[in-house]
Length: 507
Length: 109
Image (cartoon, rainbow over all chains, first blue to last red; front, side, top):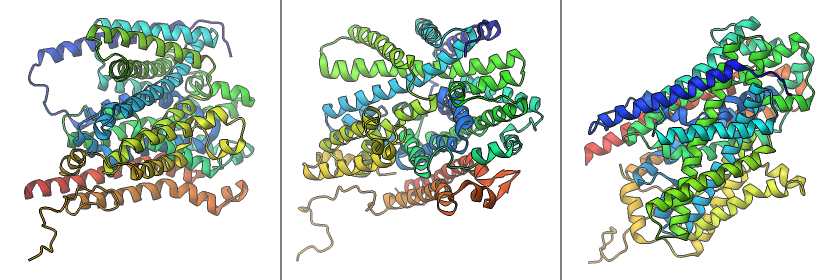
């Protein structure tokens, strides 16, 4: 769907927002430098929560969920609940224990707990692949929005979007601007909810709480539409719903970048209470997201617009912006939505590419290939790795294999099938050893990628293990593998088990 | 006289950690809290789709028989609005209990 006009308002606004965020980042950094010694002041729990939420909100949350709700109705709640309920799992099962363990990146934890550099490299490769898949979804969002903004083709828009992201990344790196997490969250949530309220107002629904008035929009759908759309299993079986929801939950608990940011809080208790606020802030977005899909459906009914399935699928991932455009919202408000989407994607990409490159240069290159590398050398490798990762992402994102939410879900499936069991057993079972961990990560990777690579050969495989939802069966299987292999091989060294007893499982 | 109460210094120290057989004291209480929260998490999340799948099999009957709130099936509100609140509440509830457990053990030491 190519529109040939260039939209200047969003382009201009985007430039302003990127510059402002760099300036604020710069000011924040100088402020931090001035405050030697008072860095351990108590940060409010709400602030920690806003940082968790801003780190979490990607194009999948900002654009993806509304698209899935627009297409698949009730099925979208599997995404919403998976991506919120996962935090309960993380907090309850592993939060305090991993914090007491004291290693906050996946490779660090794996090497320390399993006493094996081979296991470390496995987990590092998996962490990089997770980042890669995650980035593909973000780039799809950027490509779609730039295509809409400039009225150009998707592939061109994608390349242009990558250039903009890189320019931003390099400038931010050059002036060493740090991201102000709280401001970032505030911008994202306001640029999501204010346009939504205006959409509700335009359509004549209660605009104060669009999170509830979208129910009225669904109620007003004509019967021939709603009998399909409101039925929970029109777009997926109960098994698919449950498998997807479970996969996203265990994936959240195993996702490396969630885990690392989770522990930037000053102490264990602050981190735990930060999650409560974080979940509330994430909830604000997820309570609202389905409303875009519902209002889009409502508008299509009243205006008599009919989309065939292919068109609907093409529009789903920018339905947030399209809805605003359709109902005739002010151009500035439409731009605000587009920029929110781009910001969510860019911030996620920069975070993931930087940590991904760090993992490659340190965990893989330094630890495995060249232990004599010096600091300058490593920084060079990291820069090169960023470029290679970005190119790989570009190659996959040119032909995006699914909706933004679906691509992201595959990253969660991989995390849930590999890192989640390794963390879980590493903490809750002293007998889990390196052989078990390596076998588990191997089996988990096979389970994740088998349905993607061989799904077209066997419909049964695809039905039992949908690519987005393989962890409902995968995670328990990997846990079983780890238990069997660990039992057949010698137990981990005594100092590790003593550490688990005395440090990790004591108050 | 042989030792019978497990205090034999030659006997290997017990370093077992197992979620299903938690060590007495702090860990046992912690695991109990985890079990309660996890049960409340799993039943409320997966109970609704299982319930919807078991009782109703065809669209017409389902949409005729489920309760409605504000004109749309109640499961929309339940999954889309209530459960997120429930997750926030669970985290709150878990934190209160863990805070209480931690402070009671720190006082004892």
